[in-house]
Image (cartoon, rainbow, N blue to C red):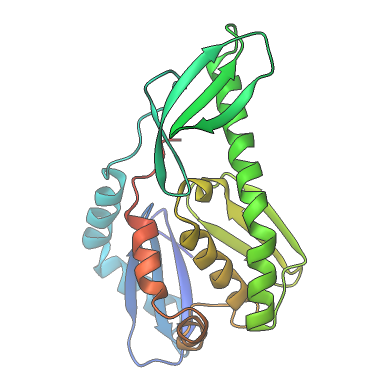
Length: 230
């Protein structure tokens, strides 16, 4: 629903009152409304909270984010939650990224553009994710009883993961390769549970509690990470 040029996600639940959320990391707005609530009632509710909503969105916009990357020696880069200092070696030999004695070595041609360097990094992160995802999906398929026969990795601005329930497909944010593995696992479990419960209802939270106790702490850990600039 669009209210005053603001996109608002509406979830109708079997509850008595309306609840309003402005969610990290980008200030997405969500309303949890009783099942019988009509659109006009929801719209008026949101309008009465518009000042607070805008303040919360502004807070998220101003949160600390990683500065733009130049992919030069001395920068900090992350893999699975661990920080590595980058050392760039210009060479005409085989190019790529390796970790040696706690340093991230980037062998690259001296005329390689910043955009191309970024693409090499993204492909490195993509490969790292693809080494972890299949085993985690298989593990949680066995535990939850639902599977995701199709999954993809892509760079997303506002979501760590998303899914298409009818097609049984999951998308995972490329940036998860920079976070601890438990963050990737949390997102996979979250999306698989959506195959059982489509929305963020109490039943959905119950599934998360059952299969991944303490998931709220991991969610907070993930959302507290410094975001990457886009």
